[in-house]
Image (cartoon, rainbow, N blue to C red; front, side, top):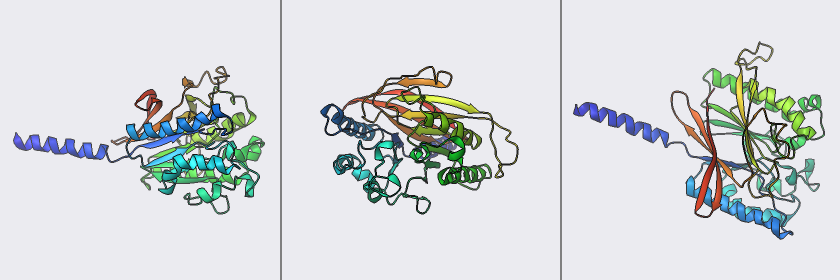
Length: 335
């Protein structure tokens, strides 16, 4: 009896240690503020409050992902200084991974990027040569994060988007990653996308041509290759949508039939401090939208181990320095 009790205790302890082996990952976006307009400078206070709450509710996260619009004016050094005063320690530790938002675009550096972006984020991993670190991927806690610069698709129609180097790199990366996952050739169990512009939103950008074109070009890729979650910003609110694309391939050959279906979760996390925006077009996304909230927030991802690992995601609103609340929570199983 005693040996049996010790055996059960050992199993429980092993599970506990395994369950705690995965650190949290934080995703948020749209922290920009107009420093010359005092009401908007509030965004930096919210950004600090978010960071304070993060470390109260999730000690020592392993990574931070920003969905873009880190600053209001990518060409203004003062904007970057204020941003660095908050995110600088994370950047210096190499655990801060940004997507480029439209507010980081500037005319003072090659390829339309702010001249301050490249020196700050030059060490981002797995970026193709000569792309100015605008898109890249990184593996953390068994998750492959693929980060895009959707600004590069602005003004292009779907056919033109599919011809861009970034889209072709993305398609190849997704195809190879899915093949490796399905054939047990990698420790990666999840694919998560991070980019600024949303595919599914009820906010003010729901009817933008770029939103429509991204949905028609990227959603089929994300569904076909079993992407678990897509994080974006741009609209200053929180929203969770689910879209089921009725094709899914486990083949490394795109010409083979697509035989399975997969539901992809789309998160708009634009509550990092920028001025709130109304949910302007709820009818556009009514069929897919599950949760909507106009509030400051960040998202916390945690890998839950098991025979079928899961991603547990919470959207958290930091109300005060000592109080926060969960506004949404869901899980996604590995595919």
